[in-house]
Length: 303
Length: 238
Ligand SMILES: Nc1ncnc2c1ncn2[C@@H]1O[C@H](COP(=O)(O)OP(=O)(O)OP(=O)(O)O)[C@@H](O)[C@H]1O
Ligand SMILES: [Mg+2]
Image (cartoon, rainbow over all chains, first blue to last red; front, side, top):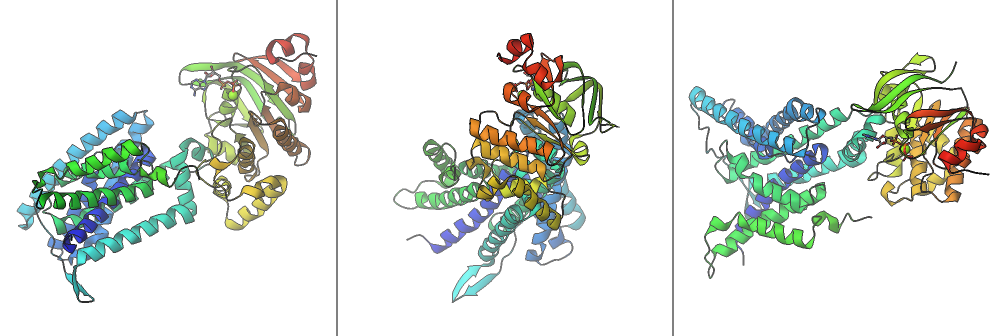
């Protein structure tokens, strides 16, 4: 029997991963760029929230919307100042990808500088910081607040995104601009505005995911790069161009990574947990061999 | 005043010039047919008229107004509609959503009112309003693209091969509606067609484009029965 705490930890990790792969997929669908700076958006979000916790003394969970805002604004700035001008000048997929690597390096450097500023000016921990959680008593069972908050957040954000995309006029325009920007332009839709909005949402979702990080692991400026690989794995697993696929991919990668590592480290195998990163990739390779179009091809074929 | 008064128009892509100075007029409420071999520049001309290809010289007056430098959505506001040869609908959206997008700037009531009118004009669409476009046949898709243009209540519509790859029956239906635009709704129609015989029979005046230059400009039936041109470029003979 697996320890229920391991299952709950897998759920929390997967919630986070699902938000990140979903938002990464949204940016890939708009700009057709493999954004290597996507993990950094999460860290921008959490540093924004952390700043208000340590300086303004806000209660931890109250700063969650700030994480959304910081991630979102930083993503829009990246889009408007770098990706969009490059795109208009005819940059191709590879050029945009290299630009995103540069943004990743620059963002992490900025975060390092910012961490130093926080430390020297406010005398607070600014690296390897953690958030304290509360525990809720649900029907006699002690549950970490993060389990509830992250799960509810994912449900709420997915519902909002679904309503926006499927039930509003702007959402129809968003889907149209993603599918065929040239035709959308002909119809008079401001594709630039639609894309910038998508990037804001994507950055916001990443920021929320980032906010959950310090509850699980010590958080530092470079963490965005470290979490990048499972995010890409989840997005590719989902079929790269499917939002629902990215969410399911996030849960598959998240659960297999946590549970796999746990089971392999138990007797009789007793494997070192250093193998942890290999698990999502093994799953990714197997899935792609079986379903080259990603798992979303299971439910979105033809219809 | 002519609807289109095009003078020495040069259109291309980037630095590549495709149309080498084209001059013609389209009169109000006429069906103006453009024919020519594959690659002669028919689609490029329509793209130029709508602002989607690079204008390298010349002038376009639309209803007396110089639109040479206007972007597509500005031309669209002036009542010009364009029915592209390819990719003229959003595959992953439903028919209703496609039409809604075409009327993006209308308020709800106005959109409803126009949608009713469009559905009267193209009643076939009622049968597949809520299906995704990618599940439709070629002819059904052309009707959706047609409806997307009609929702804007344009005064001039340019069609780029709306009957390509359709069954003769479906093509006749589309031709029938195009003619109705002119006769019943008083619109001006520019029609690029691969099916030269049919188009020239329906059209008022015609233009023959060959490798980016005008080879014929005049009454449509004259081109249809022209001894050399019809057989040389259009594969027509009596
Ligand atoms: N986007 C583009 N970039 C560069 N060249 C293009 C582009 N589109 C078309 N061309 C070239 O312009 C020329 C004219 O093409 P166009 O599509 O206007 O021909 P057409 O008369 O419409 O042909 P068809 O009957 O096959 O539709 C062709 O040589 C084509 O290769
Ligand atoms: Mg063409």
